Image (cartoon, rainbow, N blue to C red; front, top):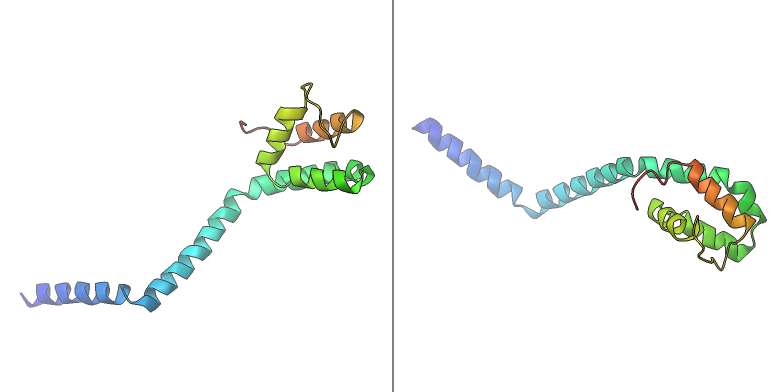
Length: 121
């Protein structure tokens, strides 16, 4: 009887302590930090492949005009942007107002040499 009373009182105290604002604040901070770690690990491969694309296309990018460089930087901001650009302008007859001709072909080839297209659009 005494043992069950102690267990129930410990549970009540634990619930009371866990509901305190300070404890909730600590758990929220810990959850945010762990969430950031998971996001970092989940996007690690994408960041590596985007860095590889930056390296491959650096010489070509240096030849671009400033507005073209900004456009290419926007494309290389995420895997999704690269995939959409490739689907829309590489291997199709769509006209890109910023990059065209040999520049477009070379940039598309740079994209295709990375693993950024491995995932479905």
